[in-house]
Image (cartoon, rainbow, N blue to C red; front, side, top):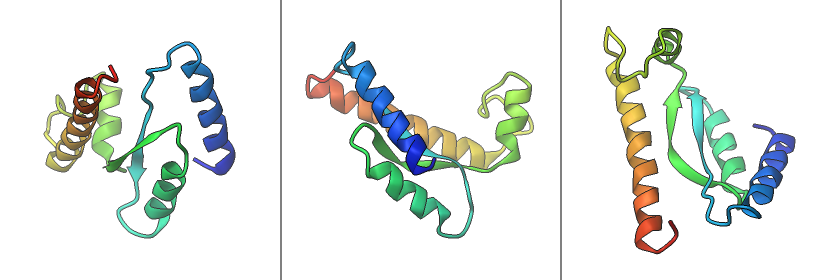
Length: 109
């Protein structure tokens, strides 16, 4: 996501918060590159906006995700099983659920 898209996303989230002030919007890296600095650059851009809560996890650029989507499945249901994709997805799930639990405990949801 570039600077223009980040600004648009920020503005949209802030507009929605006028109707739902408790909205929590999360961002993570999808189709992350296995090497290079692109992931770090993208993560820094996402961390710079206060409208999004950055989750420090990513889904890699794996064929398993597109194969699962083409079959109407989640990567957890895909056969043959892709252990790396499953691990990534479960980690993301745990982070989202953990964030929601923290918000509920602090009275945010």
